[in-house]
Image (cartoon, rainbow, N blue to C red):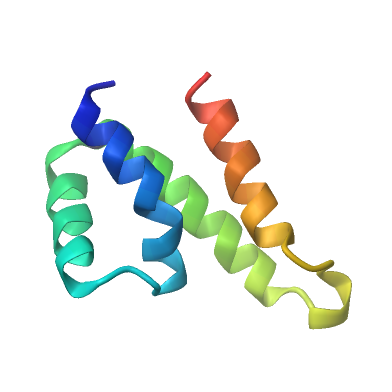
Length: 78
Ligand SMILES: [Zn+2]
């Protein structure tokens, strides 16, 4: 994985949460079109986040989304 990919992965959770700046969004989107490796990771993360969002709120302990993202990234980039 090159430096650009690492940078994208660092901000991908912000991007998924809609917290990324417009500039960052564009950068991520452009990279995902060019890089199948990051795209694959992104799809996995997105599906996981969507799954969490579909759970009833009371079943989601605080910050689980962030910790799941962190774990996933560790698994995917070991
Ligand atoms: Zn990449």
